[in-house]
Length: 183
Image: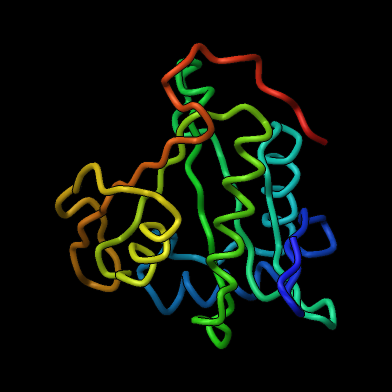
């Protein structure tokens, strides 16, 4: 996907350092994630490999010079086999690059990739302290489906978690087809 100077493409191991830097900001400075210790570059590289080898998209957005401005991925929503057609989507944008359409481009690309692979439902699990993420997902067709009160604890505060859902493709209107692996 291209948008003037912005491209969205599959992440690779070489993107791990940039992803680590972007994510570390959110781990340390925000409540967008409930992780409290930033993962190292090797851990991020392993996360990319684990998800992509399992058939889930892991994407990065780049500027015209190839610099990673954000990343997003989908992962299985729950561990049980019955969840195999449902994904949880996640997006992070460099803190100095927000409100430039990068998050929107990543969410759209994730939705497209998930639909192409046969997934039928997408969920976003969003801290109530992150209203921009709620708006981003609502604009991409996610709708609110619930609130988990006080589900998270970070930075010395209890945080509600909003659940949002979006149908992918035909959703649950038809029987599922076998998932399409992409590697």
